[in-house]
Amino acid sequence: MDRLDQFFGVHGQALQLRSERLGLIASNIANAATPNYKARDLDFAAALSNEGGVGLMRTNSGHIAPPNTGPGDGPAIRYRQPLQPSLDGNTVELATEQLQFAETALRYRSTLGLLNSRIQGLTSALKGE
Amino acid sequence: MALGLFDIAGRAMSAQLVRLNSSASNLANAGAIASSAETAYRPLKPVFGTEYEGRTGRASVSVLGVVQANVAPQRRHEPGHPLADAEGYVHVAAVDPNAELVEVVETSRQYRNNIEVLETAKSLTLETLRLGR
Image 1 (tube, each protein chain N blue to C red):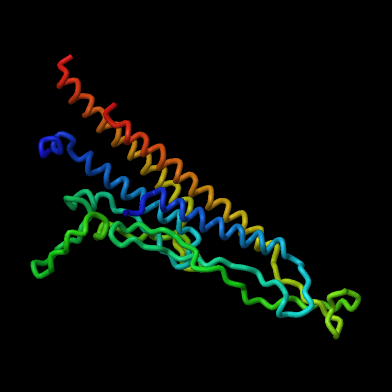
Image 2 (cartoon, each protein chain N blue to C red; image 1 turned 90 degrees about the vertical axis):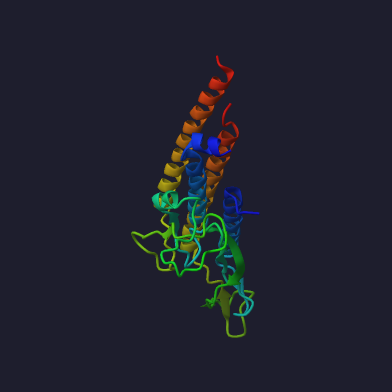
């Protein structure tokens, strides 16, 4: 399995993070009318450099190691800075969210394409054709 | 089970539908006349709340309740009206049709946005299933 993970490189992890990000943006779109909801997004570079997904960062040896909570609960999730906050405390701006959602969907597709070409390369090597 | 894209968008759509229904009720009762301030129609407002899923940072939306807006009905002097009280006043429901129409337009736009999310999620899932074929 380790070899296979190495073969796929960063793309396997990237695909998971992109789907995490799609979930966050979908949450923002779903909460576009909820008072006091603050829009959030994934800092993709921070999440990717933090190996093993999105986890709590330990910057001091005195910090207690977090339980294995899995991806998502970490410092890579950030609040979006609104261009124009609305009176009810909601910071979702639909235009921004739509743009980010479309972009993330496109990037997800491109990661899928890269994974696909790796798999095709592997299968053609296995078949020896 | 983790909150999927379909759950998030689906719940948001049902919440927006509650909002659309209350706006429709308000518009239908715009100008409705009652014989006392207590029995007059008061506009309905849905209250949305966020449902967080701590582990992944995803959040869905739910309708916490539908409340009656605290606006007093308009008092109008119409002695000839069959519903007029002893002093000749009728009580008209305090519905602002313009505000309700704006609400309807906004609701339909946000509903459509969630459909868009659903469609994208569906096509991405299908493409992921076809991976390697």
